[in-house]
Image (cartoon, rainbow, N blue to C red; front, side):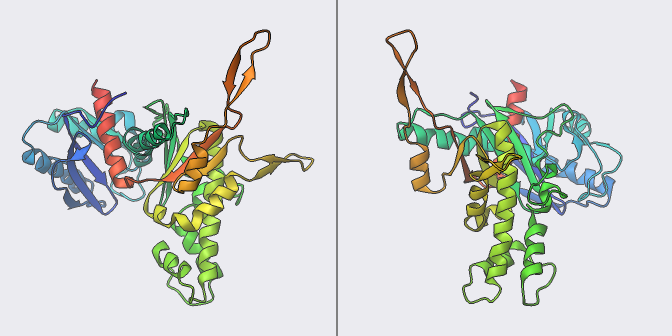
Length: 367
């Protein structure tokens, strides 16, 4: 397994948002300069592209050694493999296909790697975040279990995701694997998943349920403040908004875990409210589904544990194996009849996990 923490190569990075671009550089999985922030100039293509070049040039001027690559997350849709950006809703200057990667390669004479932020979040968590940390905790608890697969989801304005299996990031044949926002919802069958798992979902439910008067542009943090205020008459409406959000999230994660059979890690701006939505998410994942005749079945074969809770981690790490006889012999073999998975919140934070993912992706491609 690649050890990004001991690798001394330098990679230039970018955190690309609709309003601001933040440029930096990493070595050994850590930032080595003070990040440089620039307005994105998202409505003017030539100025936006000049901003990208100028930002990386300023980073390059601060480095004592030549970087080996440029690697960063950029919004999609995009042909990430070839570095071509498609029509972006939050960066309106990009229309009809813009060869951003080849432009930067020609200017800086460096390999350039661009990926989706959800993919890089998952990759960062798999290589330098939740996955190695959890396996270390399992080892310390004398558990025989180890995990190699991870689904990472980001909660915020939208619903993003990425999948890593055996330290390999799943990109897909069209550079758009793990587009979790477009998966279906059994909570709202006529809608796609993001309609129930996003900032607008919390806003919508709260405003529909609240008795008081609130501005339409209120943010989830405002709803959170109402939810934790026992004296606010609209506390029930705020709690319902997060509960419904959690049910939708649990439904989507259950579908994803059915396919991936791995750990789920949650990041993004809304991850900070996990105590309000996680109970509903776990109830959905550990709940039931039904046959046509009404027979009840577990929603998932595996039991899901919230390992942010220490008591649940101890149960998750427990030894449930037993010795069973090998037919026709006098030998036995250990058998664990309790398949189980874990869900938890990011400890790195989405921004750092994405940066680590971008750094690791470049190093792996260069090997």
